[in-house]
Image (cartoon, rainbow, N blue to C red):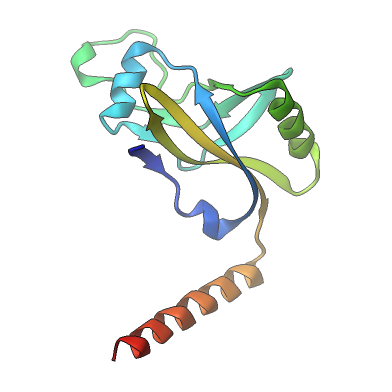
Length: 147
């Protein structure tokens, strides 16, 4: 399962509540570009159009070997493939106050490209400070244990 793109800052900015695995609907040249490392999920999020979930704000660079592509939008919304039960759950959670659905990472699973999404709640500034303090304390503890 090689990771194609990961948003590490999400775990610092959000408190993750539940994680899901979703498939992505991509064109052939988008798949090749993603496998070549042209996929970016920074600032992306999941939206709903009717009852269907879409990944919004992600960028897939044009595939270099494909030549000039007319009417290609690298930031277009891409449909997510989930079960009905998961879609209903996510839609209900997205409508709750303070919750959002964010992508964590994009990876390959066999010949498919999968997206790991999470229901998350944004952290307050003081929550981030305590996370930094805990991380620094653990780092100092690790240094002392090595001596």
